[in-house]
Amino acid sequence: MTIFTLKLPMQGPLKYINSYLVKGNEESVLIDTGLPTQEDVTTLSNYLKAYGYPNFVVITHYHPDHMGLVRLFKDKSIILISDRELEYVTYLLSEEYEKEMRKYLLANGFPEEFIQRMFRNRSRFSEIIDGVNFNTVKDGDVIKLGQEQMRVLLTPGHTMGHICLVYEKVVFCGDHILQDITPNISLLRLEDNPLKAYLESLDKVQKLDIELLYPAHGEVLKDVSKRVEEIKEHHKRRLEEIMNIIRTLGKTSGFNIASRISWYKKWDELSAFDKQLAMGETLAHIKYLVEEGFIREVNASGSIYYTMSS
Image (cartoon, rainbow, N blue to C red; front, side, top):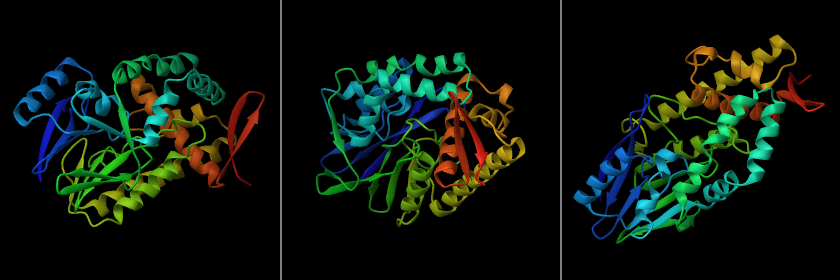
């Protein structure tokens, strides 16, 4: 089996998404597609001219840098996504999503203009998947490439339907584990507990016998267990920081907590997009602490506050 790393440009500090074309003797699979930009269309098309179109395209998760060019393959390849991820995309495009999330974010003290910006780009997902026929896979399913095969590993957390692909001692992990940054873990749907799911998914990967881990951003990882421990430690520190904020304030909102966390920049210096990620990450950690019984959620006449559990 031959692995080609297709570096597709993206703006911002990450610079590229790694799309992987994996070729067996008879068949091939493309893992993730890049952003819906002309630059990525041109770059990916040039790669495909050189290596040929894949038999299968696997989308690790719904984010635009992973699913953005899926339409290029709608008449040429079998397109696979996890059943949970497709279910979430359907929810994301529904009126129910905006109604539920807006109410929850306002109750948590997030400003209206901030929330408006969050819903602004939803229509692009409709354009991205327009006319695409997805085939769904679930945990443990196998993709056959002639005599060889890859196994689907469900790793919820970064998104609730995120998948990795396992081939012998090699894992293609999307955004599940990254070398230089911790993947964003956001609360994307009220009934989910993404941080709990993510920590369990890290354990799942850590137990595998892995020689090489191919991430969607950055370089190939060899010491997977060490990186998993570093990521777990990061989330442990973040949970402790949130509890300390609540202890200090006594009773406070999600927005107050988010704006006091020690992000890589001060809150006021974060871009609008980074604030959106920070908001989702804060609420995911709060949800974890509530469900584990460390803090309490208090609903008071349309507002939500958090206090330490007595």
